[in-house]
Amino acid sequence: MPFNAPANLETEVDEIVTHYPQKRSASLMALHAAQDHFGWISREAIEWIARKLELQPINIYELVAFYPMFRQEPAGRYQIKVCRTLSCALGGSYRLHEQFCEKLGLDPEKHGLQTTRDGKFSVEFVECLAGCGTAPVMMCNDEFYEGVSIQKADEIMKQCL
Image 1: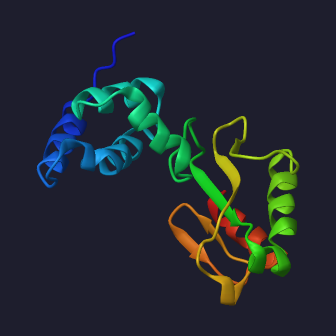
Image 2: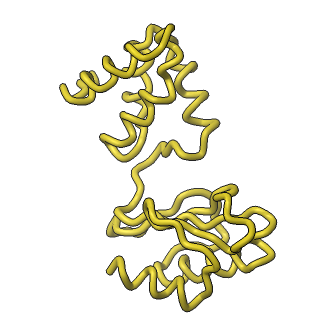
């Protein structure tokens, strides 16, 4: 199935490319633009970006597969990211992740992004969110939370309902 990028995305990526000495250098920013537009990076979007930048699709896919900020499947309206690195793990992040999963009917043992059936929430463990001194930390969409207790996690989730 042919992929037709919306005109505003096409224009945005064309503008991004002008800021780099080589088209290839715009790869990450083009991926961010596509994910901002669609909410995730599909195989078709990878192929489209590769064509735009005169690369092979594998050159774009390897970036999507390497960087955890790029999603290869749709995420929920509210994206809950719980840090799992050492300071946060010691501070209780595994219990936080389990709490979110239990409240939302998701599997706390499953790795990777999980989304509720209604598409409202996604939960995932992520690597360092750079808040080691105030662990455990998490994000809900673009909001950063420090020193998150079980009670605070419940309050955060209630704000989304």
